[in-house]
Length: 335
Length: 186
Image (tube, rainbow over all chains, first blue to last red; front, top):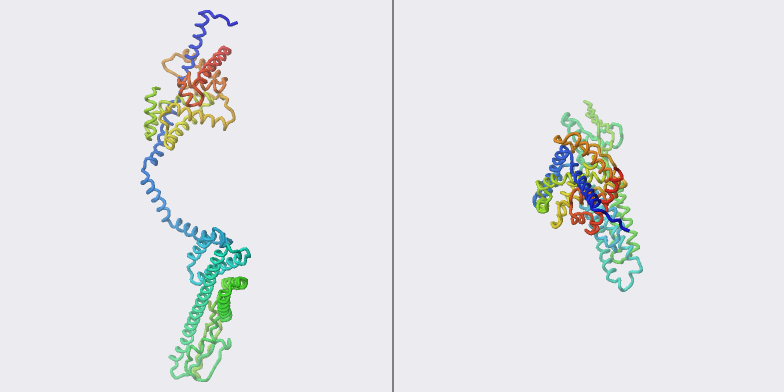
């Protein structure tokens, strides 16, 4: 049964509630320390000001601000170096990563682009041509791999095969023209090197000869071929200064053998590729392309070097009576 | 100055990135928020930190997300404070009020009051604080918001997500529970 409360009891209870509420209201007096509050106000004001400074700037101004920032950063030498390095790294590693992508892959275009980027950052003409041949032969090899697949014989793949065959033909042509260009570059290089050797030798030898002539007008001048022996030779034939042509073959040796081999290999491969191009013999094509790749790699490792042994340290001894020039020559390889 | 009109005005100004409005809001609500946080976690230092974090968060949120004009600024600040306290509970494991209130009564020193009045006041507040600490979290919360900070049930509903009817019942029970605790302590 619910106890019946008297009016006094009820008022006491109400008062208690009011009392409690009064007490609770007193808790409002618990406040922040005024010093801390003002300090925090300042901190908040500065933080808010900074954020407003950024937010208040219109979009256009903000964009130009970042553009200027990026521009000023990118003008610094370190940033340029970093950018160049990134391009090279992307070109090289990108090409490496995409090496295994075959022509039937969706990312084949990306591989071609990456190879083009690699070519774009190769500035040496010979290296560029080598890389071109290498890439073209790899592409042609990939195409032969796909065309060797028997699944492609089906009727529905006819268009695909035609497309690939066209691509194969163009890649083979690329390889051929690349090999020819490479051959031409090599020949030009050898020719230039020979001329330089001639110039060097003729300058040395003729200087000696002429010097002797000027000193002794009536004397006979003898020119000794330097590589005939390490010791000085005395020749009493009394002839005029020999033309440099006579000296060149003896005093300079161009490393003819590898050059000749390379050139022959290029020619033979071009000829074989011509045959393959017409017959579509993929197995042979693959073999030739592998040979071409090996050849290119070998050139990379063993480049044609022009060695020019020239007459150096040639003490000239002039004897008064016989006016004999004794030239003691030692052959040294000039780099 | 807890009138709705002024609250709305401040809210609008803050939305327009008015720094002065934000500082006005800080001046008005900082003490209430600090007290609300303090009675929830019971630590002066941490309450200070969370209070400043609340205001910064309110400003950042107002700038990035914009604010719904129909809501009150006070409710929004309390909601942010409540969420940060929950985060604090999570990081320290548990929602019990830890009594580390050294320095909390410093603000109560009033030169006009006699030492006797002051000591009486302090003892009353200490008793209340102790009892509040023993209450259930939801009771403590509604007492803080409704009976001390005088938030309306609509505002509390906005903050806690509870229906208004539920809040009425909860506030009544909370008050009864506090009274019982205080009587026991006498």
